[in-house]
Image 1 (cartoon, rainbow, N blue to C red):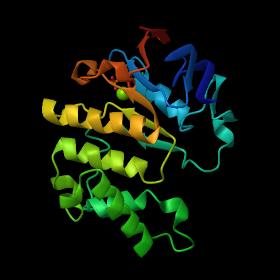
Image 2 (image 1 turned 90 degrees about the vertical axis):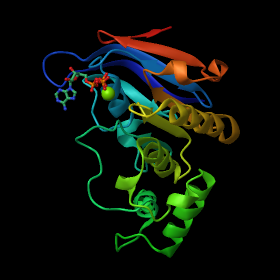
Image 3 (image 1 turned 180 degrees about the vertical axis):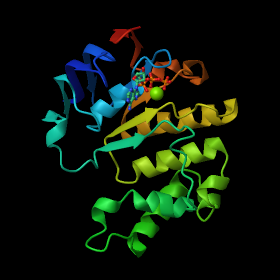
Image 4 (image 1 turned 120 degrees about the vertical axis):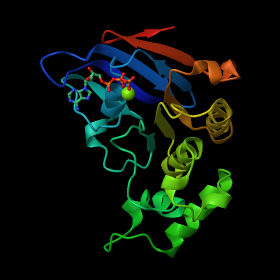
Amino acid sequence: MNAIDVKDLSFGYTAEQVLSHIDLSIKEGEFVCISGGNGSGKSTLLKLILGELKPESGSVEIFEKEVSKISSFNDLGYVPQVNVVNKISFPVTCKELVSLAMYEDFGLIKIPKKKHYQKAIEQLNEMGLREYIETPFNELSGGLQQRTMICRAMINKPKILILDEPTAGVDLESKESLFELLSSLNKDKDVTIVLVTHELEAIKDKSLITKHYRLEEGSLELC
Ligand SMILES: Nc1ncnc2c1ncn2[C@@H]1O[C@H](COP(=O)(O)OP(=O)(O)OP(=O)(O)O)[C@@H](O)[C@H]1O
Ligand SMILES: [Mg+2]
């Protein structure tokens, strides 16, 4: 079964088209990289796949279901592009940040319960973040912040993990360690990965990547 099916997708924020007639199909278990220049529409494409934006024309299906008809997004994990605007500025520990991603399970009173914190702690341990469970997220290095964001995105055990430049502004060693983490999620846990990145050179084991696309001038080309 295809995990993601994008068909003849076009989109623009204004009259000007950012994406025009994009086709993309990703099978379960694939590790797909998407690169392309600044402003080429990579983040926009991811937001359309996640149903955050609505296509002008064309369609997006997740496991053969139209994205606009999906009610629970627990199958999709998303690590958004970090920039000055969406940096988390309120004080929150790693444990809290990861727990908050389980909001669909919180019940009537929309706050995490003990079991949610417990699950967050287990997941942080599993991803090598044991030391930072109670650390304020803001105090972590960029690499550890991204690792925490991946942990957060994985908390509901999604089948697909979508990442928007998770290694931007991170030193080489942390980049390699983040790619190793993605590699183990893909190989050992069968998570389908869609990775927007400029930094393919930091991926040591290229055999990991099943497809590499470039987005230029609104269209997607297989490299
Ligand atoms: N909310 C928005 N409203 C209007 N235009 C937008 C909006 N978000 C992005 N754009 C424009 O759409 C185009 C594609 O932006 P997008 O962020 O998808 O590119 P990108 O490939 O992710 O770039 P980068 O490599 O810098 O992250 C750009 O021209 C951008 O200015
Ligand atoms: Mg972007």
